[in-house]
Image (cartoon, rainbow, N blue to C red; front, side, top):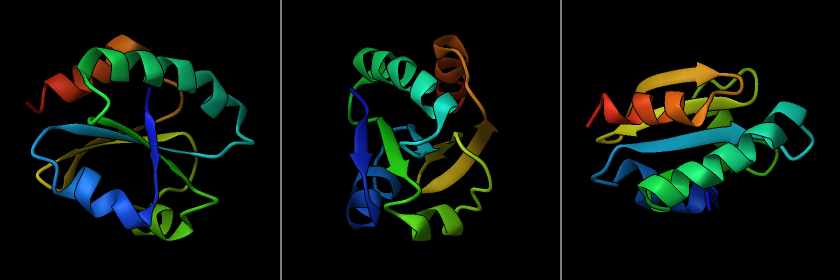
Length: 104
């Protein structure tokens, strides 16, 4: 299952993570975000729960602002503490996995 994180654990879970990680910027009221949730949970089961995270833009607006999130869902792929790829909107599990795999 994809873990919901906040600014308090973003640094340790995402920026200092040695793996390629996916972060979904979402909101609970967002229909497309709700549609993406089961896909992210499936992806987390496949690649590891320590590599797929969710940030609620209403609970952590400073993170959304810092990373220039203008619409949701926004997916950002991090490697070595840097954003290496991003996309907006609902994506298939295969597309998300491909985004992560190409930055290994």
